[in-house]
Image (cartoon, rainbow, N blue to C red; front, side):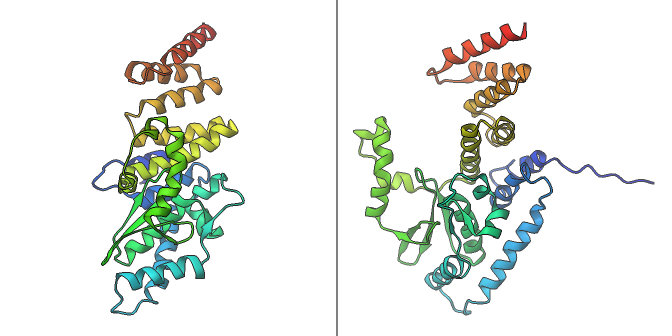
Length: 283
């Protein structure tokens, strides 16, 4: 008797990890993003490597270590001993978003570094959260004397003045915020796990779009739509990627889905024109 087991596709595996907000497997989902580029990647092996780092870290902690002591030992281990840091020389390399590559090269971007740092911090019993700060993912930690916001590229704890300074260019770019006094705290709220994975995927999406690498962008779009099934702009962008690849039927389905559901009136005429163009080409 032959027993056969259906191995889930990378997309099915990802869908299972992000299905429920209550049981959202944030770090495992982040690791799994690399499976489109590295199909042979064993996610459980990567998780095991991180567990090994955590064991090394725990051995450095005295039994009575408090929160601040744990944070100092974590930051020394992560940034000084292991020398994790930002890949400033090749910031837009997709590999910077892939956790298994980060573990090998010790170079990444704020969000990949932040997720790995958070995984280790949580393993030490620290209360940490991701922060979707504009332009630069941050992490924050609850300590006995209050909350600290940390740059995951360096481990530096940032003051309110430093955070406000980093925010200013984004406020100037966004005309809707220019005349508004939006409190800094609004930008320091905890990011839900679903939003963190969406941010990682959109980073990759933008890299591939800039490179006009439509097949890779399409793989990212498939994950984004699994993750955010009512983010209609993602259907538009998937449809445009399909159109670039000559997949007219799929392009039309996605672009028409966008037109039916979107509330954004900025580009509907342009997308409707693109649909007409595709229909003419199809005919």
